[in-house]
Length: 276
Image (cartoon, rainbow, N blue to C red; front, side, top):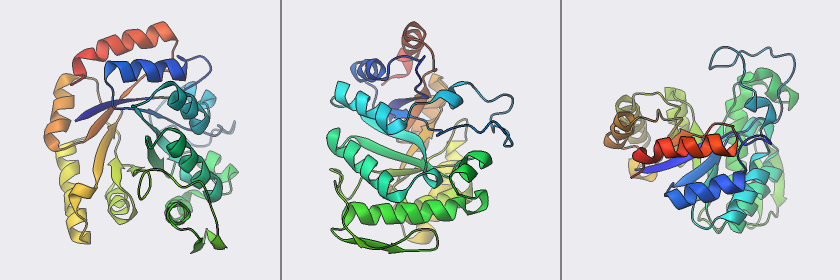
């Protein structure tokens, strides 16, 4: 099982390039970054974590810009989003951003996606909360067309365009792996239908999770071996990590705090015993 890391990259946290280099040298599989385009001052939507919204949610860098710096500074570590809020993006721009980063990083991009939880935020983008997963599905299916077809077109309720050209194409074939975040049975059905992997949040019982995923894959005629599983925000304990590995999880992501260089390097030292 691979060990990766994730961070909300900000102006006051460790430099993203230095973090990527440090993770690569220590043997981490991946670096993934979180996203919020903005946080409305109305704050009508409670944070699912409870209490006040952590300050880094307000200050996060654009994930594709941040990851481009990480890509330039490294050569082997995988780079990705965890997660990219699909209902808050234009499909043409997103297809180009992902394909560009995948090509410029020589095929190292992982596309972690989700529908989002902040109602105010997505409404500012013209997406309604109740429609977010239908919007997500159409945009992802359209993006796949843009990546894999010389002349792509798509006709849906929320995404509709006639034949068009879109370059660059990703290096990875047929495209970068698409991992969907969430924990419900609805999420697992969506993973099986149009994604390449599952990205649940810890803490979670992955023995049960893998059983549910296997059932939905079997019911849909999908080969479970074609689906990867990455646990986001895994508890940094050896017993927990091993339990995920035994359950068949492919990767866990440990949280790197949005803090300065010295704090983050000390945190990585604490994680050393968790690495393979």
